[in-house]
Image (cartoon, rainbow, N blue to C red; front, side, top):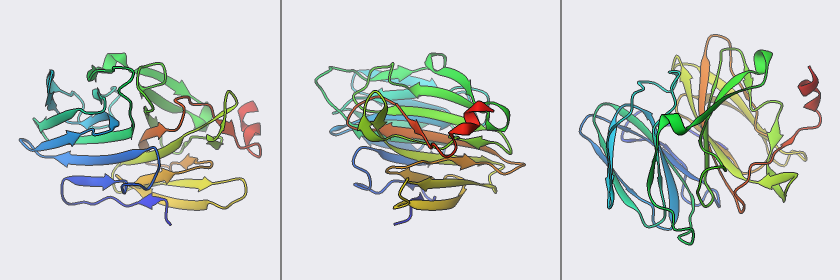
Length: 264
């Protein structure tokens, strides 16, 4: 089965991961026009809504977050607004402009007593990873230092001609503290939008080995294995990562064939 989920240019749903495709991670991205609404139901999941672009109001029982959002594109040098919704939460997103919004899902729990909360841009930790043509710009939206049951959410911008998630790394073995088991999705955008990036997903034994040309708003599914990204010259890359697994910890293992790159 292809690990590339193609996006749709029409309708409210830009791209969505088929229900049950992964055990832990769920994902969908939506486009809304001014005045349109999107109902969101957590059920037994926990959700992280990430406002990719535009302005919205998010309402539900006990919360009313009005007029959120100040970036017109994911390629602006700004962190996003986001919202954490625990299991059992119902919410409605109302578009106050043209909007793109992602709904990230993972198994939830009511034991911790977590409440719905707004994640403001200034709460997101920003950092630079790599060096040279391996440099990329990271924004942690829901890292393991912030409360949640299983969700981890991060966005990454990669400049023209650079590689990302590189050297290739994986997190598909429950062997803490050396490595954790986390499924993952990559939601991609490209600037300008007619471009494409390349992503390869492969395992040591090559039982999975798929190399994909990924276009704007496509989704790449990473059930296991290494998953590097390469960005052609002239285009810049954005991706939103959603990770979840049996334990909420991100410990990865680099492909030993390429770990020498870390010494450059």
